[in-house]
Image (cartoon, rainbow, N blue to C red):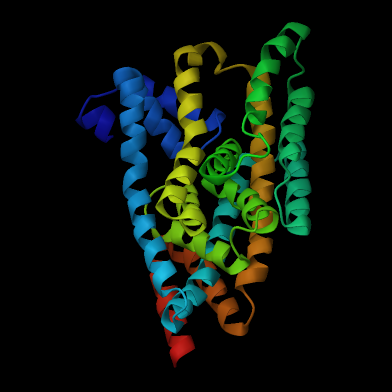
Length: 343
């Protein structure tokens, strides 16, 4: 309304096309839409300016919270706060997974099958298996929109986009950048889709964070306004300070920016491609299943006594019944944690 009706910066058609692009390409939907509208308004310069403006405020907030966490994280009152927040965040993610499931799967049996496989696999292995996302997309494509030989040749180079950031042996800040750039390619349907991917890499593979720190990182993302994937700045800060936070944040949003800028000029040509739409629907169903599985994975680390179980149940119930804003619920959970731990 602000950009279309009030400021008249873009047309309604531009907005609708940007929203459709955001639903097809990897990355947080709001970030994609904002970058696309910046591109429509003023080309690459506009897209770049919007990308910086969209990410910077929440990035700075996460930096401040990260510094406070590192400085005071060992104190009992800080631990009590995250004791309550962690349980509340699990309920919020569970609610988001439920809503996303209703939105993306409908009554499609194939998509439900993909969802179930990814949910069980993620819960069982405690990690997000990247190749299953690609398999899900290909299976959906072959069943719903079998491509011709010519279309296969056209699509094949784009599949390589998912493999670009898999360089091995990269270390330091460049390694952090590459890891989170890879993560950014697998955000479909919701920014929460990145959570199981990050858990497998950050905690189990690279051992950058402990399980408790990872849950706290997700909580920090929920506390701050902006995209959920900004949690990577917290992770990067704990790994390598401000430089690590910057490398992680740039990495996670770089694929989003690149995809939008590269695809925007030819959007109208491929937006209604049935093969692309079928592939994306399969990947999105897989991402939704991974989020559902991640709820179980994180719940094991955050809900470990009667008090945390009650905080999670109450949070979930309030979200369903009254739709209270999430920051308010998180603040209440933090207060509950303080009371329970210091009573």
